[in-house]
Image (cartoon, rainbow, N blue to C red; front, side, top):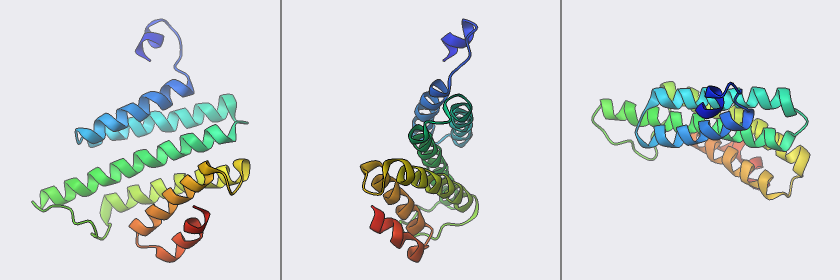
Length: 157
């Protein structure tokens, strides 16, 4: 992307989406919360540019929404790990989600629910993209101990 900028060209929504996804993986691997937030901003910018430039492509919008949701899940997981590391404890798998990580998980859920709705509307209820997104929403709802709300998504998956 820097090559484009150095050449006087603007980054496209795809550039921002692609770079943001890679940045998220690297930031997650190396436990860099601030870099995760930068990556989220990049992917969110991608969503805004996509809506402006190619707003009729709702399937791609759903894919970008999914990525934004994934980035927020990565941030929430790092926030949980860092919270437990401060207490010198390993994060238990069944730990109750609280604090900053809960907010990040809930933000992720908003994006994943929007993505699922778009996939369901534009690809149909029996499309693999719709099913995979339903699974993502259900998993996150269960992570947040919202089991009853997860049931319709589990059926969609």
